Length: 79
Image (cartoon, rainbow, N blue to C red):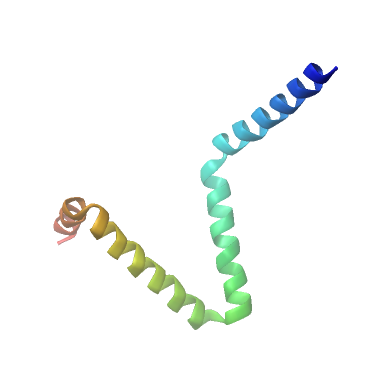
């Protein structure tokens, strides 16, 4: 009986993992825009835009620290 119950738990866990693998980017997009929507509703438009811009700047700085040459190649393609 315990083996059957354990097998059912593994099957249901695998179903959830497969679901997240299949719809990974949709789930990430949904959560990202849900957070942005909540920020718009609670903080207002301009404060939310400021937070988004500062986060993008932070991502850019972190990216340059992680992959300096890749980032420079990216900038060269845009200029």
